[in-house]
Image (cartoon, rainbow, N blue to C red):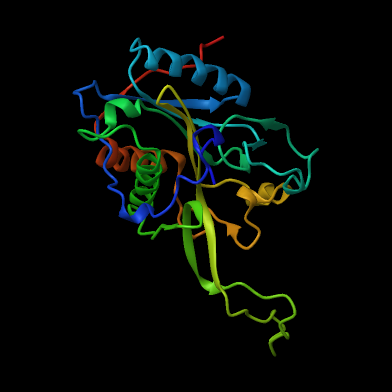
Length: 273
């Protein structure tokens, strides 16, 4: 699960039955959209988010989507298990207040920190709905992948977006084939291409999503990503698509507007030194 325990880890159930549109219901300004052009340290990013979330909750600042890349690091959410940190000395490890387990961030992966006021985005007569927000994040990612002709899928027993592979994953103990290649198992092969991990404070969201564009996938070997041992990870480039980070950003922005409403450009949040 990838929702902070403070708000209940059993909230993600039948997300396919939830509406995916989550546009503002009170005429709020367009969401600010900021893209950093350099690597951002994790602690620095959290400090920026904390300040912005407080300002949004107090109606002193507009909502924001902040796109960054981090240097290689691991983060552990509220459900992280020590056994899932396989190589604790490989990269810096940060314990964080978001929901979920261990994940990797690094160059080639687009992280989008999503700071939205769910109170402004609740349906008439209903309060904010975390399940609906998670479903909307998944819809955003699925819509992004669709722009590259990739079918992203959600799973009811685990959060995030998954891609079915045309190949089948070799199973341990399968007899070798005559050509010397490993045997092929019967289980479908699916890999995770995007992760979701959120936290909510005063109904303002933070943390968010990560999309694998062209990260070094071997860096995921130092953890059990999101506690899921049965499946692997993939990226847009790993799937054979020559996608740049700019290409991914354009697709993310267009798909976001379909789900959450209009955005407008905002400057960098990191001061130039």
